[in-house]
Length: 395
Ligand code: HEM
Picture 1: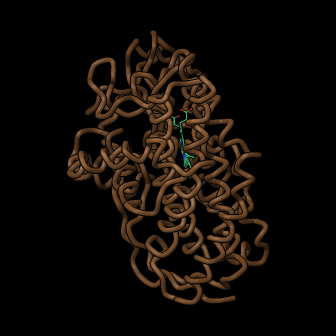
Picture 2 (picture 1 turned 90 degrees about the vertical axis):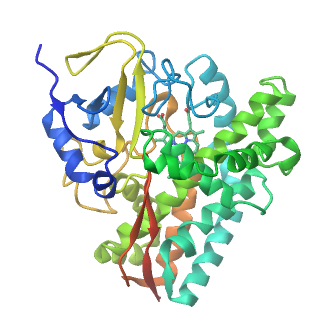
């Protein structure tokens, strides 16, 4: 059995968060499994091994946390998620409820209202011409449609952004990024937990539907509040960055935008390709439940395994010309939503948000011009933009 190579790379160093791609290549080409020098973790950066680890939920568990912190050894920064940070049978019970609420059929009901907001927001951007892709579109759109669908009031929604930033930073090391995002941890967490209560949720919304599962005796009221928290943690920042990265990719590949403009029906595949090309969720971890084998290498029990989703999405073993952003590619099989039993339960919602916004842009905008230097918001897990100066040239 060959030795597992050790690499002196820090996935959380600012330069790697700013531009992770050279590090991904180094990790992928070093081997199917590597050890990191500065963290007690093994890492896989190739598509095949990422898929293997995420699919084998019995050996690679989530209940010890899906970030760097091993909950078997350290206390989590917040009470554990009942779905993301859980294994069967508890996971199955919670997942059944959320999958029902977010099923393609159920989500089809909200499509019309999501579409109306997309049309209106893109119209406003076209009227303005010079926009900030993040602050004028990628951020306000999910922040309007998703909490509306959950059934939240309009007031205080900026707390969702602060909370998302904190949750995804908490999956990395206790570095400056985490310290900065937890500065307002107490009031922000309080706001979130208050808004998970049934009295704060409009009847009929996704949140209320979770409480209906409690009425039916499938879960108790405390569990219902925690499942609403899962929506509020995972459903906003992820989609904002998914949209931001899609705008970024289209703006920097005018020939691809021209194809989308010529055929707006390509909006769905364009969004899918941008998820592959610039993956919002860069990493998730698992923990070995017993001694495990990955690509012929032995990983000891209770060890963290870093799955590099974004790197798997550019693995040349899986993709032809992985560095090419190509909206006509079949991008299915990407790891941007994870895979296996924990594969994103909100992906139907995320996909309609992406499709509707890109479709509106495709029809209303002839050309997207980059008018200034974008800036990034560094986060330990998410690939996020802070600003993206663009011009929408009307069709
Ligand atoms: C572009 C947008 C999104 C991306 C890239 C994304 C990505 C992911 C990924 C990679 C996972 C798997 C985590 C793991 O395996 O440990 C996940 C799980 C999850 N996502 Fe998403 N997500 C997005 C949008 C959403 C939305 C809109 C919602 C809510 C409606 C949501 C709710 C969840 C939940 C609750 C889980 C946990 C599922 C489970 O453990 O069974 N996500 N997401």
